[in-house]
Image 1 (cartoon, helix red, strand yellow):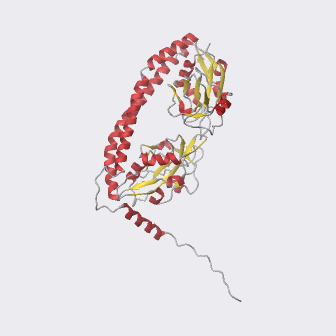
Image 2 (cartoon, helix red, strand yellow):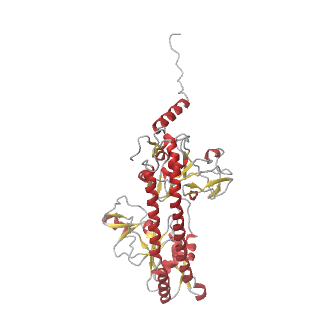
Image 3 (cartoon, rainbow, N blue to C red):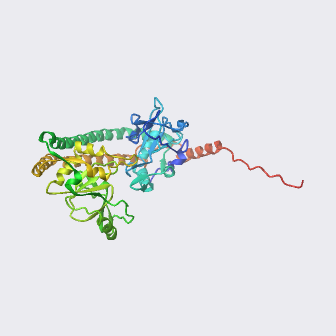
Length: 446
């Protein structure tokens, strides 16, 4: 990173008033303590409405958040969410505690302003470090307390930090306002999508359609491999499809990996997706999403996705997809989810699920009507997504300019960050307890 001469770049652990702290597990949603949910970390702030009840040990005061604290997500399944942070901008009216899914960062205000810190944390400079050090186990991404402490932070002179924070907030607030409008527009499009599905697929009661067990109208309902292959790469012989590649509109191959032939053969011999089969996410945060496979080629499938092979003579795959994605279908299926850390719909529940089965010609008519009404949505959604990406790029451009020292003027009278940091180190050393001496053993002759 190219920074002004008066700046320094140091590990986060050098800028703390207290050591980093992990939260504690609070068990089931019963107890007397208010515990933050991961959803509380939004828009770089901590939302106190996103809490649950839980029980903490007698030393619960250790896990209470204070004004000025930053909370960082240790892990939440998706790499995009690891390291997400929020600042506690005001003292909670009542005690609020942070869970074991978060790390508390208590910044030394003599070294960093909280606003400046959060703007640094939101920058690509920090994001790249987070993604480089995050670890994954069974598809769950996490980052350790030690790795958070080693994240390098650019430090400007304290007076310049305040000038940068004010300038960033003025410019970023306009971007965030536009981004909020785009997010609302995206939500409206999703609601329209679901209302179309509901209008067409909730004709069941008036038409007295039959209700059938899913496994009875399919030749197979199974899942992919339960062992994520070690031999994955960005290029190779066969596509390796996981939950991240499944979207309602089809397969998204923008972030796909590949496996070699011998790995694919082992997986495909047990689970063989074919064109026209339904792929259904059964594990994780996007569980309950269905799509129809449009690929002619063979590919390998992970166990987070269920493979459903409808009997085409009685069940249209596109009708099944639309039903599973409809409000009723989604509610019925995800209501059977189990697990706490990783939410999943077990395969047996999918097989035993009751679905409506109108005559095939009526299924085809419903699919045609639904897809005709939804034709306009992809282009509108893509326009919104492009605008959101543009807003994020503009945001990052402002942050990059800020942390290159080009957003506000330099003041030669500002105390350099290196002098400030040296003074903090000296103060810390002076406050450290003296090392204990070992008692000297008596010697000599008696």
